[in-house]
Length: 296
Image 1 (cartoon, rainbow, N blue to C red):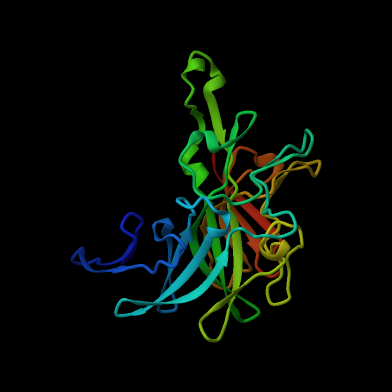
Image 2 (cartoon, one colour):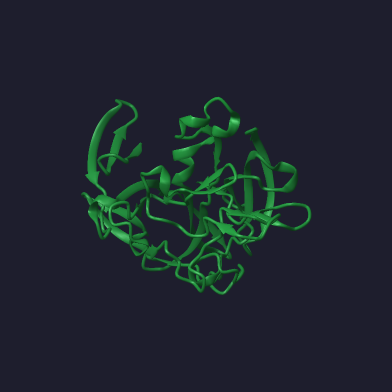
């Protein structure tokens, strides 16, 4: 069994029979500030082990330091880099999909870019009872096949959700006798796809396209668009309130035409629910969703 220790940034090899730690290896750290490295995602596929690392920019506070890395473990403590890209997408509006859109109001967007990790409550944006500040964690890696070619799907968790929760208490004790102290974290993760190359590296989607197929140029991803462009919630009138509903976890059943992922509010009828939603791997559109639980 393989385990990532997010505290000491090591990869552990565990013998499941004896329950002994067989080995531990330092995970590569190529962040501008080594202290900003946050390994998390782990995937074993086709006899090879992959590790995902987020450069959190926690110490530098610079958006240009936000990066994602995926490494392949070779052997004898060695890794090779599969892909590296910026999480500050730098398209026309410096944005990704917004965590919250005031569609019933003036259309203002909140949380429409990834931010350096924060540690101070005052750094959150607020909208009504929501607190918002998307902070990326490369949480999951999955490999899929489309058109007889291999692709890597990467699910990003928003750390803000781990910091806040839902219907939780704020840090202001002046309103503790009323219901005004309850707040809800409003998250904005993401899901990206990369094409695997013959040399073992990967090429990230660009402006919504992967190998010339699918996606939408919607100013919500690397290069100005995103392949999985229906990772959003809109009501029955077509008003989009959340441009990103991804919560990190992904999966793939060999031979299927879709990628399930953990989501929230996948449709007007399923607002405030946690769901397993699916995106079509052929063109990036959405499929169905399954209710996991009602969070109200």
